[in-house]
Length: 287
Image (cartoon, rainbow, N blue to C red; front, side, top):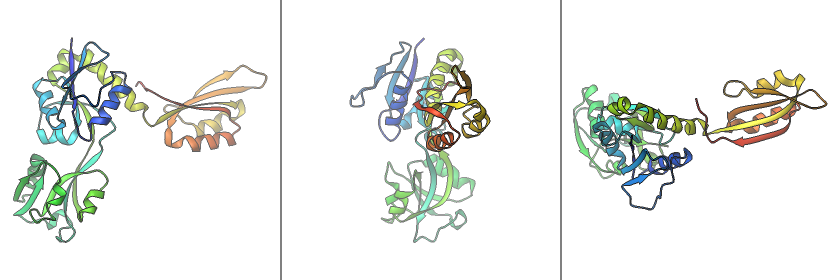
């Protein structure tokens, strides 16, 4: 039973989406090819390449069973899809921003009749409608941050990852609508008719997402230091401990830890007389 997965054909989500699929062993994708379809190592899984903005509607209509796109684009489209997994990339905030010179610092400073530019007209309309603010809306296909500078907008509704672009253009964040990131979404009918295959794809992607940012630490320790080491190396569900066959009473300890804590953990473990310490990469962590 063939399952079709839609992924972005360009933009900020494309590269990390392809990398995720490759890390999951689904298949190597030629980034340079102008392809619309691609087979994978799995004969029952096919990729299609479309605009990230179009992924939600294609999945909702059943043209694709699964899709990778931004949560912001799911909300903007209003498509009825099932969200299966947060993928750990493409993080950003949807914000309302105004010029530093506008005097608009909070949502309460916004008056009816304000001019708004955005790539997300549905999200923008809903935001201002909830607050009873009438707006003059202009939809743009990019570079919304320049519109207050050239005098055609008072506010923008746009994505902001670090805030650097907004500051560069003399804009301040007035309000944050929501946090967004890349998601794996599914067609609701496909969830029923192709559940086993859809769940299989979700599981293999989740295993890669869970492994990212983690390392496997292994060490030998004196048996008497076990309780001290357990405080140093907690692991995901506690360390795994086994006995080392040798002349002295030693234990082998292994644990999955956050990569950013490896240096600290190794330093403290050495103080507790750990030795033969290994730090290894992890490809997947299955729940």
